[in-house]
Length: 123
Image (cartoon, rainbow, N blue to C red; front, side):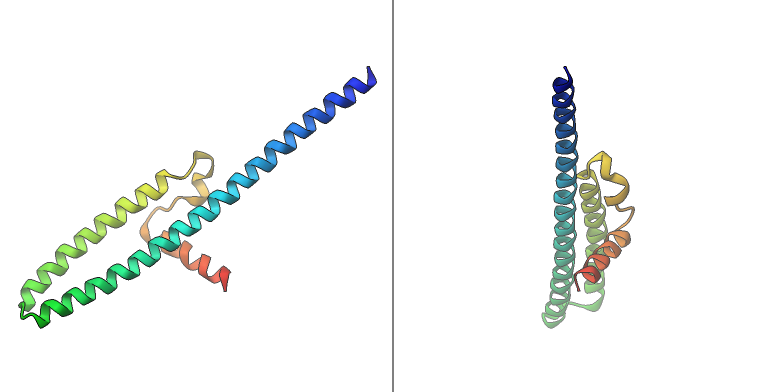
C-alpha cells in the first residue's frame, strides 16, 4: 500500500512538472514570435518611409506641382494611420488571453517603445 502512494505521488509530480515546463516553453516561444513580429513591423515601417520619400522626390522631378504632392502626402498619411491601427489590432488579437497584459500594445508608440527596449537588450 505504501508503494502505491509513492507511485501515485510520483506520477502526480511528474504530470505537474511536465505541464509547468510545457507552459514555460509555450510562453518563451510566444515571446520570441512576438519579438520577431515587432522587428518585422519596424523594418516595414522604415521601408515604407524610405519608399514614400523616393515617391515624393520622383514626383517632384517629374514636374508634379507642390500642391499635388501635398495632397498625395495627406492621402499617404491617412493610409499609414489606418495601416498602423489595423496592424496593431491584428498583433493584439494574436496574443493569448493569458498573456494579454504583458504583450498587448495600446498604441503604435507603445509598440515602438517595446521594440526600442528589445534592441537595447540585444546590444
